[in-house]
Length: 266
Image (cartoon, rainbow, N blue to C red):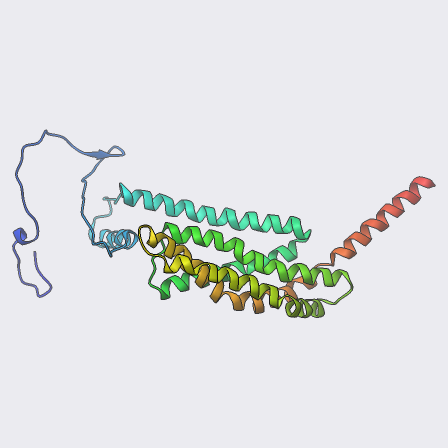
């Protein structure tokens, strides 16, 4: 082998060869010849980063007919990461369907759910600033953040819908709703963000897991405050004009019932 300077180095300085007698066998995985490779990592080297680096090395060095299969903790992490992404999609869909049923309007539900990706992006940015890895605990915190972000948007959108039912135009409804709902949104957001501080400041066994969840809550909600307070009214103003107020639908239904009763009487 050669070092970075191109000089040859003995392989004995890197590995220890031990000769021992073993039974003649051919290891296989999925009916294909396989070679097991085990290695230890430093405690400050994340497993996900090691897997990514190993995949990059294998893609550049191994022939095309040789595949890389992770086992043990690496396989568990790979499977869990895939399942978490499915959980994100299910959580996002469930929140949208519940909001659509609650608002009785797809447009209002869409306004709330469109602000959720910005909150997730803010949480990931907070993890990047604090040099916290995206592990299973921070991913659980991201799923929880979806519900917290939707809660803040509901306060504004529901009040704006009520104002539209009273005859307000879309611009006046969202402007008044943003002004009136500013204090309750800020209060709930500040209380939730401060509630995540004990998770960040905690020490002892399991502190890494609590810290990851705490930074998602603290950073995600804290940095996404601007999206809830400013972006939600903008999205509402752009989409709400495409649908009629709920009062208009109720009035239309009442007219249809009256017309049906008139036809029945005749």
